[in-house]
Amino acid sequence: MLDDVNLIDPFIVEAHMLLAEGLRRTALRDTKKLERALDEYQAALDLKVPYRVEALYGQAACHEALGDKAAALEKVTAALEADPDHKEARALKERLGKP
Image (cartoon, rainbow, N blue to C red; front, side, top):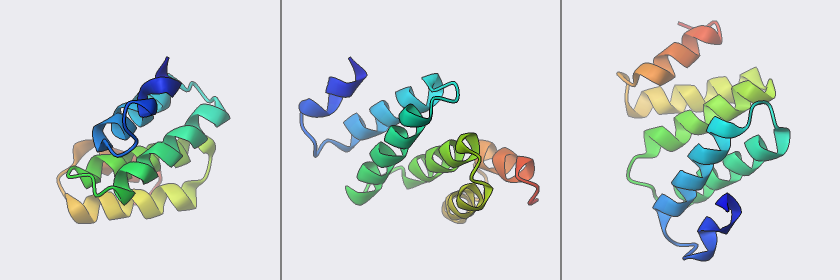
């Protein structure tokens, strides 16, 4: 069912964000779901999502779950540049060993 959400209209940024969030939160280390979530977050960013920090944080969390600390750090740093007070992003950066 989640895969069908973008069939509604691929230019609805919220559809990409909802799909990405659903995939990330239910992935449980499922590499395919995490990679698909990364693609959906990127689609939302490409469509100029108004809450950019959430998409960047989502990408960082996916990269962390995939074991790619360098990519996670890059995305979480970008998220914190957009919103230095984003609690989840700050916590993720600390988990990555970068205060």
